[in-house]
Length: 467
Image (cartoon, rainbow, N blue to C red; front, side, top):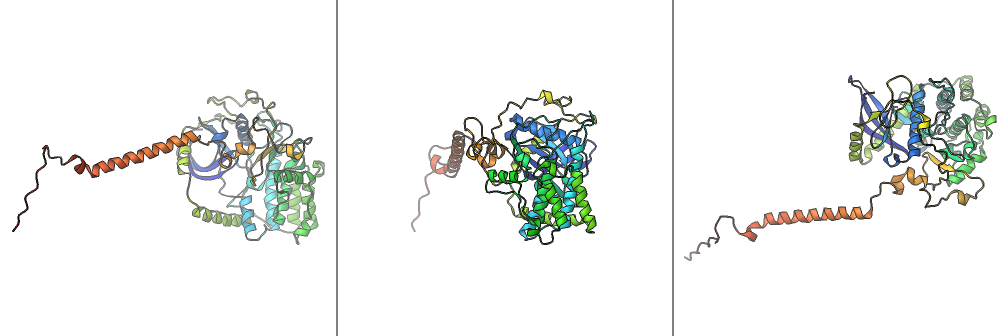
């Protein structure tokens, strides 16, 4: 594309990638703010994670909708992969809800309905989008609908982001049978059971978020990941009217239908759920616009800016190294209008799933411990084993997925050997000692070597006169 990218701020870091705010400058000098998603260096050698990242890149190229974050460019360097996306100046739904909860408040009912109504528009588009090359339905399923992936701008726009776990016919990386993808608390019962999922799994996730916004509580949240998965499988939904005095039976019926355990009993399309929510708003004469959401977003942004100003500034050197790396970025997009990716050598051939490594034979026995994080996670669900066996893996077979996704917490990746640390410490001590010796020689050279007047014998002192 010929654009140059400059990093201005680190925004967030997740299990697979970190996100920066940046500026894209074209050859003609035009500039615009962008979000730059960079795959973590510790994962670039893992072919499965790279394939998943490229899945998101390819899918995002097809998606052009007002309620979906747009992707502008895909790049690669010797060290990592980059995704250049639309920058949404605002906050995510998780931050907004946490701010309200800290003040013992809940989002107003009309506002919550409006947010999820906009998400239904995005999902209806993604579920029905067709390939511009073949005209065939892509059958996209997001599979990770959750508050962190719903962005709200300070102008009140609602946009869905992060199709990194999306399932589509065009995927490079295929999901092994029995492997669960997504945040545990927002899975559908069929996904938590390791069964095949379709677009109705996203509708279930929308129902979860609606329930949580109305009550100010988590719907499926156990003490451990395993307990959370079990709660999702059972899909027992507490009464909304018991937790929210103003809840009307009609609205609770809409939420319960979205949360039906059997996919056949749910709304069959995101548009159907959106229509039901819109009908409720209109029938109750509830007026909600983007302007109403904008004030909430701006208040959340102000709180975030205040907290950030009190935090110590870190990572300047790392950001400089990343910026230097971005100077060598090579776009993987073709110059034409068709969404296509190039191979890693910088060519311009269309993305061919057959050219990538077959992942069907890869192990599906991933497991990890609970760390309290709501980041994207993956676990193999095997119904024939006891729970104790489901949560353990052999150390000589594969690292836990938690270690692979969160190297900073576990210290698995990037940990320097003890011998290297010893050498560095010895060098530092030697440099300090050499400096001290040099300073001592300069200060006491006259006493050690005598005066530097060119004679061998020093001049005797003058005699003392006695009067």
